[in-house]
Image (cartoon, rainbow, N blue to C red; front, side, top):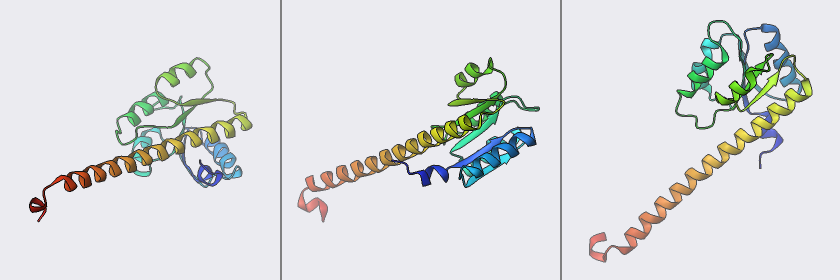
Length: 164
């Protein structure tokens, strides 16, 4: 199971074109004990930042100039290294919630922020993301063990002369 330590050390990227929102979320997260928080006000940087840092959670504003949150999610989907991308969208427009979920967001946070709700949704999203990563690692270990076991069984079946 994920410990609180694991969750608080999950890497988070805050993306919002409004510096005041970025600052508010950074302060909220720091106050809640999160230690790996980065941010950008430039949506064009998000895909490259994620490719470099592999964030556990991206808090993504939907309404931004140059590239909106929907376009950012599309760009993130092009990175095939991440099978489970954890994105929580930030929106003041209720009509965008369903569209965001359909576009791949795992959750949403309404603006203006309810700070208790924000902390709870972030905690839950990180917990699910970290459980997914543990499951993925366990699956890889299991696959390696199966390959090794199969190789050993094949070797045991070879005649003594073929092994020499």
